[in-house]
Length: 52
Length: 255
Image (cartoon, rainbow over all chains, first blue to last red; front, side):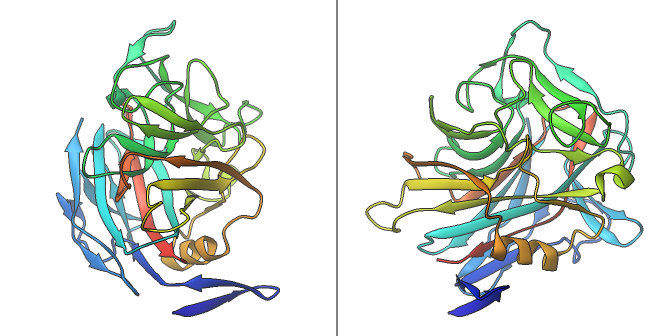
C-alpha cells in the first residue's frame, strides 16, 4: 500500500489505479476496449459498445 | 460504430458512435474510496474533429416524455440489473430506465449557465439548467444534486482553455461488507460548473494527479443505499448531431 504526498503534507492512501488512454489501439473502427490490469487490485474488464 | 481517432495526428481518442452506449466493467476489490475521472469532448456526428454547430434539442417542447435513450449519462451502473446509476445526467426527474419529462438539450454556453460567451457545449434539460447529478435505483431517484455541478465541453478551444474537460466523481462507502451498497458521491462544486479543468493535453498523468488530489470545494450526495453495487463505467451521449469523445479515463482506489 503506497502513500502519495500532495502539496502541504496532505497524504492519501493509494491502494491501486487503472487508466486507459487508448494509445495501444490503432486508428479506425473498434468494437471492444480490452481488459486492462492496473496496479494494486484494480483492473477493468472488456469494454463494449451498444447502440441505443 | 465506435472508433479510435488520432487527434492532432497522434493522440488516440475514443469516439463513440451516434447514440452508442459504452460499458466498461471495473474491479477494485472492497473499495471504500474510489475516484473515477474522464477527459471528454464532443465532435460533429459526421466529422471527427469539428466541435462547432452541435446545438440540438431532442423531443418537441413543451415537456415531452422521453426514453432513457434520449438522456445523457456519465457515471457508474451495476451490471446485474443495469438499473442503478450514480453520476451526471440531464434527466430532470425520474429514473434511468423509464420515460422522463422535458426535452433533452445540447446548448451553447459559457462556463456557467448563460451565454456571455460561446466557449462550451452543455447538456441540459428543457425544465432546468441547475441539476446535473443523480442517484437512480430502479424506478426511484435516491438522490439529486443541486446547482454547481454542470458539465461543459469545449466548442472554442482558445476560449475554453483547451479541447477536453476533466470531470471526476468520488464514491465512498463505509465498508465493503455490511454496508457495501451505501454510497456517497462527491464532485467538484463551482459556479454553475463541476468541471475540474480544461486542457489540450488530456494525459493519464494529469488525470491521475487530479484524482489523487481531488477538489476540496465539492458537492456531496448521499449516503444512499442502492439495491446493487455499481461495477461498470457507463457513458452515453443521446444526441444525433454530435458524438462523445473520451480522451482518457481511469480510476484511483484510495481506500
